[in-house]
Image (cartoon, rainbow, N blue to C red; front, side, top):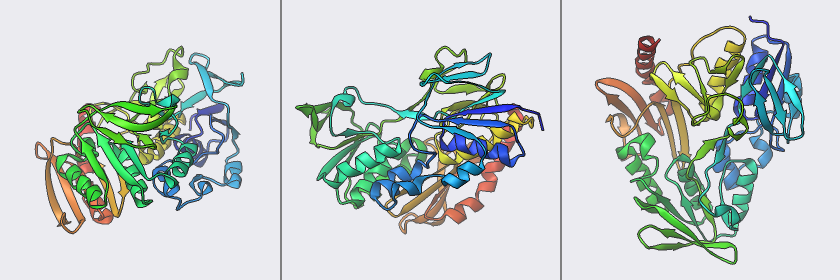
Amino acid sequence: MTQVGSVLVVGASAAGLATAEALRRKGYQGALTVIGGEFHPPYDRPPLSKQVLAGEWVPERAQLRTADQLAALDAEIVLQDPARSLDTAARTVRTASGRAVRADAVVIATGLRSRAFPGQQSLEGVHTLRSLDDALALRSALQSADRTVVIGDGVLGAEIAATARGMGVDVTLVGMLTAPMVGLLGSRMAARLAQLHTDRGVHMEFGVAVEFLQEERGRVTAVGLADGRVLPARTVVVAIGSVPATDWLTDSGLTVADGVVCDAFCQAADGVYAVGDVARWHHRGLGKFVRWENRTNANEQAAAVAANILGENRPYTPVPYMWTDQFDAKIQAHGLLGEDADVQVVEGSEEDGRFVALYRRDGHMTGVLGWNMPKQARLHRAAVVDHYTAQAALHA
């Protein structure tokens, strides 16, 4: 194990905490500091759009570790003090309070911030969902709302729409593409997801852009579409994507382009690494730079970064994985799906709402989708792993 005197993790996120814990598991005994910008200790984000928003979980249940577990990590955890700058050469981070922290290795785990619709910040009744406080504010609004419009055709927008509908709210989901999550699932399975939402009472408005938010006395009253229609709503959720939280790195000298750009080992500069949603690294299995926004990647990449800090020097080449729960559908995807693949259902049936679908490109199995069949989908994962392992060898 390489001797590292001190490690600084910037971001008290799931990825940041997982990095710190992986270091300790691997035997690292040096100084360890975790800096975060929020008031809350590290918490899990996937439940925010589902269990927390629905009120099925109290907020504390989303916390990743208890106070005793955090104390056992033997790390200095600093909250409510976001990073403001990084001196890459000196590996020194300055925070909003003026604190300067230097370390032998710096791990950037600052995650994302929600992308805003122009003008939304000044309007009451317009919400985004990224933080625990966002989820609680949106829940409060939905409890008194008779209708809401959710803008966004990705995973988050679809999950919020499903949860809000489950709370009894009249929901309209709006997106520019042809169906929710079509970029991830491909047109066939995205159409099935759209049908699920429609069957449960969600109104779908797809293939149309949102042109403006109508307001009266500082409060949103409607969503205006590019085709001239106006959708009344005093509660609107904007879920049009996120951007990496990298503003504080402007003068760092790091390459920042849709995230912190890293090599195959998740290293952005000598002694500086990135992990989780903010990291854009070279995936040798895919032969390109990627940035993945999902919980599984946060954990796996954290373990890889911890290992590389300690000298293992292994490229990070995971098989893509994502999941989403909407209404009674539990959807898992291993590998890459997408619109240009050939799709074949090999177990179960679409009509029964329980099936496994294989995705192939050029004769290679590149992805597996499980719809309420997680165990069966995982059994097909081996062929996907073989494909990406072979690709990684080609790009090594």
